Image (cartoon, rainbow, N blue to C red; front, side, top):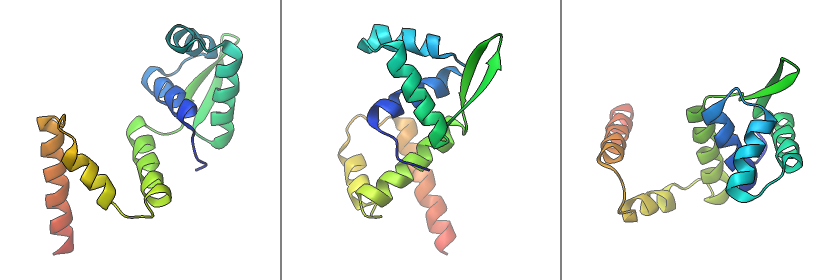
Length: 124
């Protein structure tokens, strides 16, 4: 899928957490949070729709937007693209970042251990 900019990602994550949602509701949130106006939000959401990240359906005369993928699938794809495009396919810088990150939660560490075990089992 096409790349997503930082502002697009922020709006996409909000929509993924609150869908189905109207442009007006997203605009209200981002106007209070960042001072963005409805036109900016509408343009960004339409750009995300054209890129294939959002869908929209009319309900009561208002378009309601939803993500095309689950939030987990979306984030996994964005991380994959980041590793491929920004890190040249190497996960070493990413794992170094995780190792140096002191605020990892116990659940996150347990999940990382589980992933490593699964990878080791696949290689056997």
